[in-house]
Image 1 (cartoon, rainbow, N blue to C red):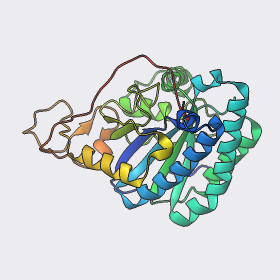
Image 2: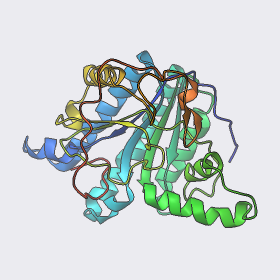
Image 3: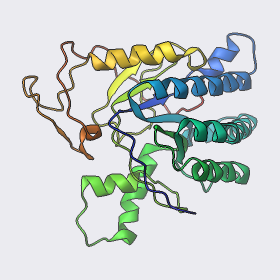
Length: 286
């Protein structure tokens, strides 16, 4: 597989989204759950388009978690077919819009048609420079961290580990096809569908992420919802452990300078950070 360096993507935000609520949205309308997932794909397209107009450099979408293998076999098969279809349909649009598309997560358990669609999409969009779209497929953050720790044994076990070098290993869990650079750590993590948990998603990268939970089901989440979330984020006071008066640029404890840009102190404190429950992983969700 040809390796492409991560293109420069400016100094925008890294926004991550747990796309929750597809199945419940469909069931409330008397539709098969598969129709909810298909509606969720349409929402993903709209959100990516909206992201191009906002200050977003990296957008990571939770498409299928490793725990989703516990779903009924026909639903899993349908999700994989839908993902392969989405990737095939999006290649030309991504190329024309300057979107770089990559997939994080394990690939050894995915069906061949989906693996082929992933490889084609990544190769075809490698030069995109406007936004980096990452889909998390068969993804588990804890598994990624464990695999990164094990990978140290063959990278260079004698070299001291750093947060930056370990973060690069975490970025490519279980993907023997090639190394990918680590994305900047998450600035804003959004979860739709009313649940208030992280579900094993980007735990390493979200150490200082702002969290926003909304009751809106993913199929109903639109560009205005994304803009509202970004407005909420920009009103929060991101101190990174410092006092509010200390407004100089801060280095991230994980990956260096935060998003490659200085942070700024805002007037209003965070208002929606709520953590509760002990849920299982989600992706194209309930």
